[in-house]
Length: 454
Image (spheres, rainbow, N blue to C red):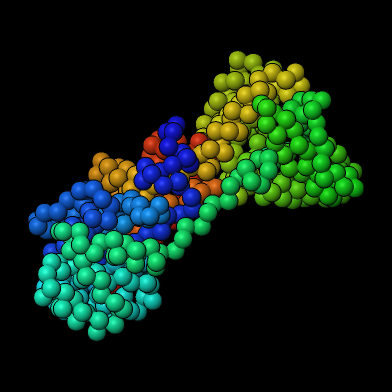
């Protein structure tokens, strides 16, 4: 499991909330890459006049005045559009759809071209904040020409020299002024103890597991009326920390007599999962994995919570059963093989201590954030090795990806066509191999940019 989980991104800024995205748009040779290099403070965005050189890497992590943001260089996208003006306008549209703000770079020495006009239309329509950079302002004369850009109607042109770095500080200040502040992601610890739901079908040993964990150090809280209707949480000391076991009343007093108790039990289960951060799915290892087990697993998966699988009553498992259990696990639980698994015997307490490290791993995976730079670098390598299969003459490409949230990790992929479900599963598998994500579902959302019919 990679250690870069949720401590710090390699951009040097603490990874709080989704980092805002700034897209850089402009005609070829207006000095976008030189400017991007200025912004990120290192020569990464390769400046060569060969067309399409900027195509490989599109996103970079930048930090200015202690604020982190991602710069997307729309350089060589969409090389197959017809005219230059169309191509640049197309890039601007993609940029506008994925960015929080756009930096529009114009060559002040050349003035406004048709391609620029097309971009201005797209930008005005989008309503997104725009910073207008008048580049190549290396002397007084050009400065005068830069002011002529006021009449684009995009606000004040900021004269800069990508080459000399002149004015880049003011430009970055203007960028920060229009980028949203990243929302601080709620600190899990601030909400008190981590919340765990113990779930599983009746009689799999949830009560004995809870009793075993709680031992004598059980601290009952919120035990209001103690009826089965009220959620009753228990605070339990495990591994030197306090954990909150959510809604344990249903576990402690099972409503055998109540009519429709099946329905209430499943309702309880899903409510407990929704209130928890991580669900421990308890399965009776001595019996075949049932339809009901799979339903509960599916409920956890869809809730987007972290998950740990606990196979209980392990003392009842002989060689023969172990063989079949492994087969069932591989066949029926294939969709949740990412969940840490512990084999325990709650009645005797055997291996119950393995639960805490498993919970920690699952919660860490659930809160892992990958920086935009790392993510796109990784996807670039994966797609180069295994391109998407060609479907009816088209081959969808991933142009850019960003992680928009954690708990569970959620990604948006901007693509030139819809990705196959199989390819999506492949990407998820590779993401897990690369970044860990143990114990957590991963959400991949696609934003497809369809070509407009001419």
